[in-house]
Amino acid sequence: MKKIFTLCLSVFLLLGVFAGVSLSSSAVAVGQMFRFEIGAGDWGKGTNPIQDGLWVFEWFDEETDTFGLMRWAESGSYFEAPFATAAASDVHWYCRHRSSGANMHPGAKADSVRTFVCPESGEIEYSVIVARQAAVSGSNNGNSLRIFRNETLVWPVDQENGYQTLETTAAVTVTAKLTVQKGDKIRLMVGSLGNSNGDGVDVLQNTVTYLSGENLTPEEENPEGKTLRIACVGDSITAGYKLANPAAESFPARLQELLGEEYTVLNFGNSAKTLLSTGNDPYIKTATYQSSLASDPDIVIIELGSNDAKAVNWKDGASKEQFKSDYLALIEAYRNLPTHPEIYICTSPFVRPGASTSISASVIANEIGPLEKEIAEEAGCEVIDLFACTSKLPAADFDADGLHPSASGAQKLAQYIFDFLQAAEEEDPSNTDQPSNTDNPSNSETEDTSKSVPWILGSIIVAVVILAGISFFVFRTEKKKQ
Image 1 (cartoon, rainbow, N blue to C red):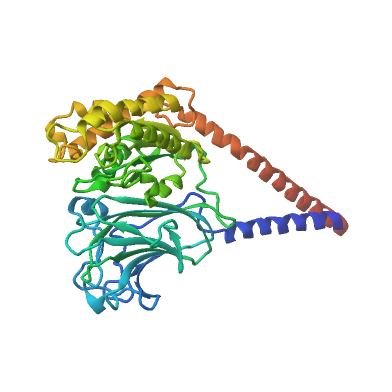
Image 2 (image 1 turned 90 degrees about the horizontal axis):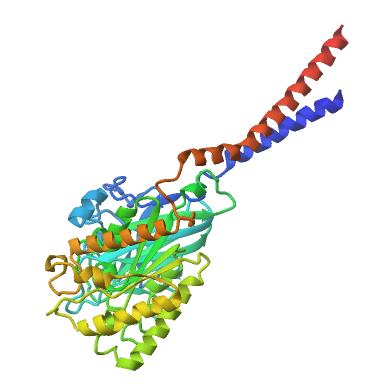
């Protein structure tokens, strides 16, 4: 009798332990994304400081190396509109340095900081897209961009000056993986380089995704719902230079709309960059390149080569050999990533006759374009022929410079790439890693049910043991009374 009682008690205690673990588990789930919701909350208007949930606005004083909480400016410069409105009217997180003096933060050398307070320990992916509201002009030297974990610089780590410079209106995408402890502060810091009155910088998107952690709940783990990540690597054409709203109008942004939620399209375009490692501004020497490597891509689309066609970079035969060697090395760098992504090479786009650019149309058409196809064949990559696509576009699909696509042109580039990817997927039906709209939903439901069977059986067994123990205990007690 004592053994049965002990067994029942043990079962109850175990169930209590399991219930306690369940109740004490983290509210943060694996795969959970925290998005800075533009327009969410009042951001402390009328109070001090500006903060809302896990997101906090701070300032950083470069002279004293101290952080402080930002105060509200009645001018409304720091207020945010809903994202749909923001995308249409260019109203985002308006980071203006010293524009309101002591109303916001002290001193001319105080940087503006957006901070995420980590709700749980684990590994996170931090992602942000930023852009200046106007290009650098006059004595203005642009803005500095950097990311800290508490007081430690975590991005960029390969720049001598310790920050990435923002000089144009082209959107800059940063993706970084970080190991964090609960309560850590991940700080996005934007500073001014030479303009004491400050500069407007828009944070177009800011997210934090929990990838793993001992205390995280597995509720959002869903292999069937995993999105494929596409890294668009390129120059100003990828970045969306000359577009009014690159974050919404660049071809990667339009491609995201076409592909839908099953894909995550990341824009790693950086204006004026060359593929040549010996060029005047190599892509591989940028923080953007490092971010693209850290983005865990499943697919990489490379659009580089236009700036290599400048006279300062292209030296006939010697440049061809260097270009080929550098391109093959770039492909290998992406292929050697843990995700082993599929690589697509884009031919450099068409340059219209009479274009106001130092990029040679003849070098693009007769030398770089054919060389890109040759490299793709040697590397075993498929070619997305953007030259053929853009050569058929009317003048209205180009900017006035005859090189960069207009908003309508970027939309057509996205459609061309989308159609190419869809055709490639149809030609390879064995590729089960890519999500398809034709998947049979009943199959996934069956899989989900089968995964839950062991838990159901386990629960039934536990319940039977408990009931049997209780029944036996009651039976013996009643028998003794008789």
